[in-house]
Amino acid sequence: MSPRFLIPLLLAALPLASCGGEESRSAHGAPRVRITNVSRERIPDEISAFGSVSYVEKIAVSSQVEGRVRRVLKRIGDRVEAGETLAEMERLPLEIEERKVQAEIVQAEAAARLSAVKLEEARRRVDNTLLSIDKARNTLEGRQIALDNMHRKLSNQVVLLASGGVTADLVENLRTEERQLSIEVRQAGKDLEMLARGYRDEDILAAGLPAPGNQAERLESFRTLNTRIEAAEAEAARANLKASRLREESVRLLLGECTIKAPRAGVIGQRNFEEGEEVQKSTPLFVFFDMARVHIVVSVGEKDHGRLARGQRARIRVEALGSNEYPAVLDLLTPLFDLQSRSGEVRLLLANPGERLRPGMFAKAVIQTGGDTTAFRVPIPCVLTREKDKPVVFVVAAGTAYEKPVRLGKEKENTVEILEGLTEKDGVVVEGMENLKDGQAVSVL
Image (cartoon, rainbow, N blue to C red; front, side, top):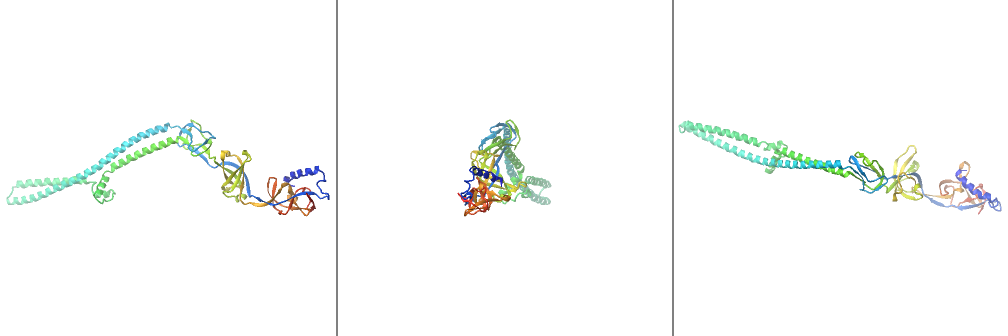
């Protein structure tokens, strides 16, 4: 006989032994028994597993600045709200850096203004140069006209000299004036050429600028072409000013990071520094958990794992918190199995009002798979074992007790499921079955 049925049988036998043999048998000598008619009950398909409470989300808070921790405001176990100050870093080095950058900005602004003035003056010089070019071109044209006139006059005087109409001195003087005018024309041409460098259409194209379509575009192209150095200096000054302002913004951001705040609500579970300690950038200072919800992490064997799906309901009981049950929902099924235990991790999500559930607590979970069945349920002492530990129950029909092999299911509250072997018309012996034999006549109480 199986050990789990032995104690109930012994307890059931005590009153029989104490009362003698008369009350256990009828007047005709048949054993007296009590029976119950069994009926099918709904048997929820559930998977039980053991595990522990775990956090849903763990948040590490780091410092974005290097330096000394000036003040610590929170300790391990404290609950914090989003935006609440946790600690403060030393600000003095960054405040000094901020003042230095502000001085740089003042200088950069002055340099930017100066470069803008220089650029504007360069653009005006271009306009003046264009006027000078027009003037030089007019001068050249005037000199050329004067030279042409002198050529004609000298030719006429040479003819008159041949006829004796003028003196040779007059002709020589005219030749001297002609040579002087020629020199002036060549010089005016050179002056115009020098002024026009960088102010010709071919210069615009050679610089990679688009060909101007009108006089206004042509003027702007000449300005662009001939103020490249001043424009570059102005651009460099603006860039330097922008860089200084960005450095100022960065320093101000770092000054803001000197106040370490909680990114969201939670409970501090770890603190990795002490007040006055030097910390490095990005070093985790606090670790805290969102305790509004928690996971129950359990392991389920591969045989049962296929019956699970996200969204299934579960009941959670934590031994440390008494007999209260907490509703949960299956949140995560791991796709991997442990090679040794042949089980997979399952995470059940549940609300944590009052934050009584803490990471690490031992928990029992009952997961409802939804594949409910029906079965008979009888008291455990009704089930006896025969050879080879096969379970049987006695049923009574027409005053005779018959032994029926059964297949057992799960036990619950001193009862056990009978999955096979009974029908709804069977009357199962619940008292007096200890010494019955198959086919024995009985008296039903």
